[in-house]
Length: 210
Image 1 (cartoon, rainbow, N blue to C red):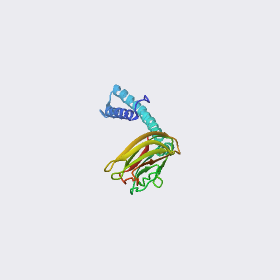
Image 2 (tube, rainbow, N blue to C red):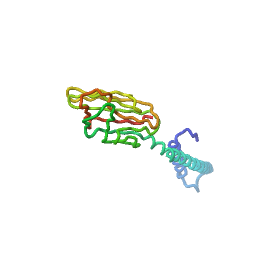
Image 3 (cartoon, rainbow, N blue to C red):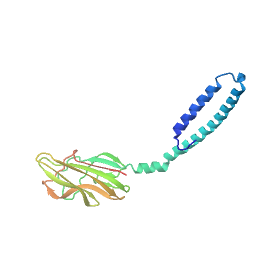
Image 4 (cartoon, helix red, strand yellow):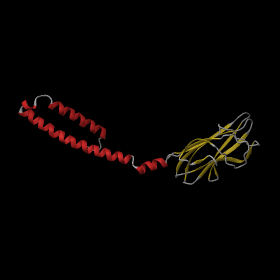
């Protein structure tokens, strides 16, 4: 049977053939069947034996494919690629200096444990393409400029502020190497002193795209 035909279809077809075969056998008393019917019965039994062999072969192939699809090595690789985090500022940051890292200490998601809520840094566990997003809410009547840094270099800028509460957000897609450090920081000295980052609405998230 063609190996390109899906296993489930092959098994369904074999089951259908088995049903027809047993129906033909049960149509009459085997002791009273004609020569033609005897020949038909022999053909059916021969077909059944062939089908049984096919079933055993397909079961073996399915077993091999199943083991291959969930091999321990593939499980380990898949687990390594589960990299994602989402954290929020809590409590509000009332004093921050130029170039200081903004620490998002309230962690909601941290698959892969690559984000450190104590330092506010994300350490890239495996090389790949990553997506990062951040939203910064300034204080009432204040403004602040922030940025996403990779190994200390600005890669994404945000401006937050208005006469009430103003938020700024941005997203970046970056090719990174294992060991790279990503963080959100105060960009330069610009902003309303004392520089302020409002809690909970200010977030930092990222994940491995591929």
